[in-house]
Amino acid sequence: MSIPVGYLIGLAVLAFPVLRLPRVPMSVGTPAFFVSMSINELPVLATLAFGASTALAVSEGDLASPVAIGAAVLAAACLGLQVWRGVAALSVLRRAMGPIDVSGRLPLWRVLAFPFAVRPRAVERFANLSYGPFGRRNSMDLYRRRGATTGARAPVLVHFHGGYYTTGHKSSQSLPMLHRLAERGWVCLSANYRLRPAATFEDHLVDVKRLVAWVRAHADEWGVDPERIVLSGSSAGAHMSAMAAFTDGDPAYQPGFEDADTSVSAVVSLGGYLGRYFDGRPETSPTENVPAGAPPVLVVHGTHDSLVPVADARRFAERLRADSRNLVVYAELPGAHHGFDLYWSPRFAAVVNAVEAFTAEVFARQRVR
Image 1 (cartoon, rainbow, N blue to C red):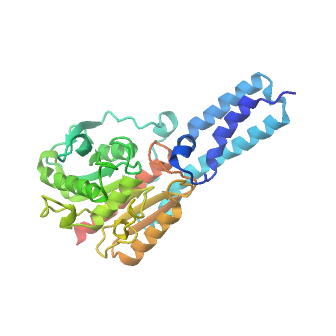
Image 2: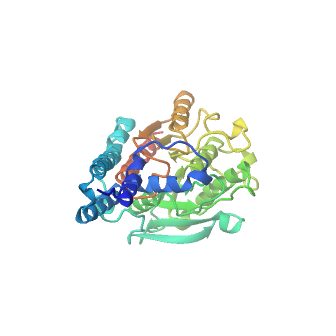
Image 3: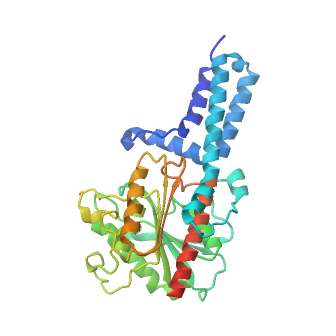
């Protein structure tokens, strides 16, 4: 009785994302990271792949082996656990939000039929707009509802990509969130910024603040509300967003536009790196520099993040709650890896609902003040 080695390897690939992977250098672990993240965030496609490969194994008589049968049962259980963890994200987020109501409606047709982040027809994109003097690295894409008028005074979400501060580009991360909010009437910006090693920590913050200043300067042109600006980011982008929000009005990070208002209404951190920058200075860490006047912050992190430990996000949330007088919401997504914001997964669809609820609460509190 032969053992179907190829089938077993396929099952192992589909099943191993259920585990919390050890931290390894990206140069070594990049392939495993992308495979595990994609399978974990696309449970429907992974289940279909499992079904197809198992059907083929049955047709070829490969499941006659007890080893293959046991491996198939184990893989099915692992996939089931991945699906359950993804679906459980909504209840986790609802608990984290407390009395703030989070919608339970999920775009199931996108999750089930086409989970990839394709821009909906209702949303138009204005690509490669310039917000600063550094060419492509100071460019952005702007998303808004097709047919929106300049008098709408829409809220604005500004998103910065991750990539270890050394790589990455606009319109590569959190696109489901940008598309959804744009459909709902927001104006969403996804921006490039200067990268290491040519850029420094200060350069990154200057880019963030320059874009916030750009939003206010062009509010009438694009029909945005300059009093409702939300900074968001994935991984390194979350670090930038938090530090820019925490250094509101600091002229050291606003060369040439020192008098510009760069305050924001809130920050959304998605799998954020929240420690010290590469030079190790404590003043570069959001966790170590939470001001009492920090804006409201939503922190969402995966329990199985192998690049940025969830303990770091937990520590950041604790410092926020201790030092900030504004709203803080922290949620740990069961089973989520780094990069959970790339697809229309059940998990990220629930996160987008939470972002909508969180920002609605923030704006409501602003109106009361």
